[in-house]
Image (cartoon, rainbow, N blue to C red; front, side):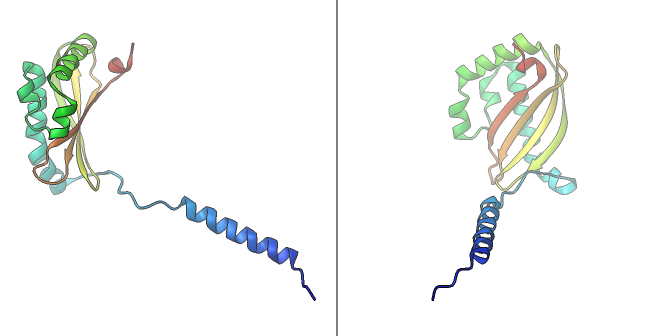
Length: 154
């Protein structure tokens, strides 16, 4: 004799489906960037501030060697001297002359330390410069981004 349990079977299938859906939503843990404070912040700034100053000095002086002094090898490959000159033309045309910089925040995740500055230019005082450093020694610059309303415009 064959016994049918359609309600029980439906319930079992539903439970398995819900568990499977729930498991698919679980991701491998990723360490989100966190804001560093106090001594941790200062530890990053000890290597990041001089390197960031080299980037800015290189832009101001139009000196690629100064600008790229603290770059990782892959960063130098991605931002060669031709790309540097293109960046200068874009910054000059859209932002005008550089005025000043202020530290905004220092972030850390499992692989990188990121320092964010607010730059003031002649035509825009809301320029963000994000400098990303390898977390491990020798803390080379592995990413550099500029963003502002003027840079996003036509």
